[in-house]
Amino acid sequence: MSQLINIDEEYRQWVLGVCGRFRNSQIKAAVSVNNALIEFYWELGKDIVDMNLEKKYGTGTMNAISQDLRRNLPGVKGLSPINMYYTKRFYTSYNQLFVKFPQVVEKFGEDGIKQILFSIPWGHHRYIIDKFSENPQRAFYYVLQTHINGWSRAVLLNMVELDSQEPLGKAISNFELTLPDTQSDLAQEITKDPYTFDFAAVTQPYHENELKKALENNISQFLLELGSGFAYMGREYRLVVGDTEQFIDLLFYNTQIRSYVVIEVKVTKFKPGDIGQLGTYVSAVNHQLKGEHDNPTIGLLICKDKDTVLAQYALESTSQPIGISEYELSKLFPENFKGTLPSIEDIENEIKDK
Image (cartoon, rainbow, N blue to C red):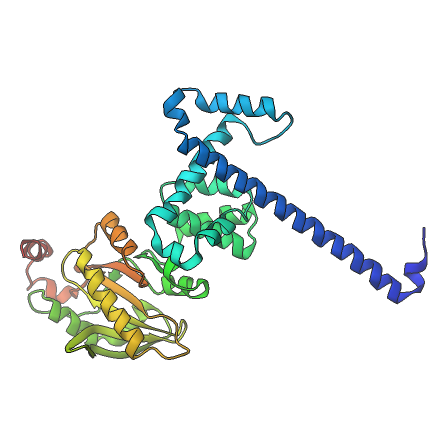
């Protein structure tokens, strides 16, 4: 065995450098092979869908495809019948990003999305597909986080489990797709669903103006509800847009995410038009208040109730970062007022009838 490594430090460092370069080459080769394999699965799934093979040949088609491929590619792994189903689901799930989620395409580009998808191991994909095949946005979020952070499969499993127990913020939002990666998680952390306003002393019949007044009078508690880092900018904050005046219900600035936060409060059930109104306010703040070093303005809609599917569709129609949360009506009233006020059921029925 050579002793040069023990007597010549320069030579020793050179040997260690050569070994390091070799290991890096191994990693690059493994990554390249993985990317090529996932791209192959993508194209395979695409062919199965585009050629309509299952409809054309009926039950047992995946078994037949698997047998024919293995017969012509002896010794190649990953061609089992179950994997044929996964390649189809892999393509059909993520292809929806290009069809239904223009925000994702705008942020990453079609090639960028594919590069991210092809960058993580197939075992990760199979797990994510099992969990989120009906929710391609959420699925792509975990693909992206795995790509960025280099998560092992064990870490991925734990992160998904942790998220299902203690989500960053339960409010429906499009922050993951409309904000920079470093901002989206923090933005989600400031959202809750539902918000509880048990501090708000609402003593008259329930109206939107009364709720807004209660929020203003109890702003310090409201900031605690939202989280740390908030600076109160104003209630009914006036902006001039073109030839008209617009008034934002509540405007904050968050020092943690370096963003303005526009909040609109609705006493009724969520309506798609609410997104257009809030999106206009967000855009106006970006143009008139946002500074050079500020991040994009965030919108938060707090409403009485929401249809989750309708809310999700509405969010897909906008490129502005917006979250939608509910509030709990029953906690708006302190205990000592409940005896003198209409019942919650009466109030909710009144609202529904409007």
